[in-house]
Image (tube, rainbow over all chains, first blue to last red; front, side):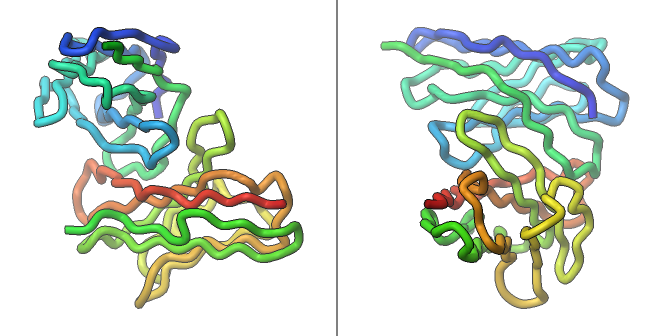
Length: 110
Length: 115
């Protein structure tokens, strides 16, 4: 599975959009981009995933560049409860090893 | 639809004892994965099971650790003769059969403390 690079930490003001970048320049054509988050040692929570089209659900939006070498997770209106470590993962379709890197620590501040 | 269930949530063992961690996947899910998270570290894959089969155990320590997912009942991660270095959070995830993306959904974890 391809390697991902994320900033170590980010701050965001409550109520503003949080944009979390991820670089995956070695991604293969059959690899999906997944985002999970882990709130203070709870189990990782699935957020969203995509292959090449932008995706949106009730939690977030995922923007994938046309060359698929990077993506951005957008939390449209961050709240204090969104403070967590966010993991960007690329995984081949049908692959089972979800490889977690260090992720981005997002601090949402009042 | 209940999520992935794990019990116990917290487990304390003395060195040399056995630890048994249980995981009940989401309804309709037949694939189970176990991960370990050491303090201040990321999650590491341990083992992938389907009903009655171990598909990949490349992340499992060679000794003292075993996992099973019987036809009936929860998946069990068993650690024999625990040592202090086994203290960690153990997370189970499950996924449904047949989907190419196989999104994994995680349980709340079991925190093992070895005294």
